[in-house]
Length: 167
Image: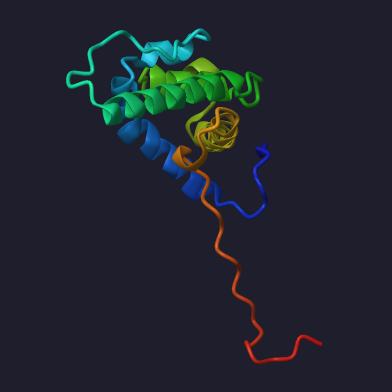
């Protein structure tokens, strides 16, 4: 079961990038806009944040908080738009593993997969998230601030020598 990413993308590295993003950067974006993980499960995440103070109200902090709010909205929308199919329950995997912070074995049990199959399905869920996350950031107009988690594959080495004629 493959997601719709271009053929030249590296599934292993993309899944690793998404995993690192959820583990290392998600809380930064959430705290920057005054949200928490449970807000991402709600289809009505507010871009206004949770109303926390920004402390020193400098322009940079306001702009960063606004960007973080848009990024969080894109995360929520991307997760909500991931597949809910029995064979590819990406939504349930992402919510269970990264929003509810359950162990893999708990989520795999809920989804009805064995350990090995769950890891394959989880990798596809991470790749699907990467694709949808980039799409929603583009729709939101983030431009240069968009976070691209998709890792492109390196071109395969050819057996031809560089100076050989192609004909």
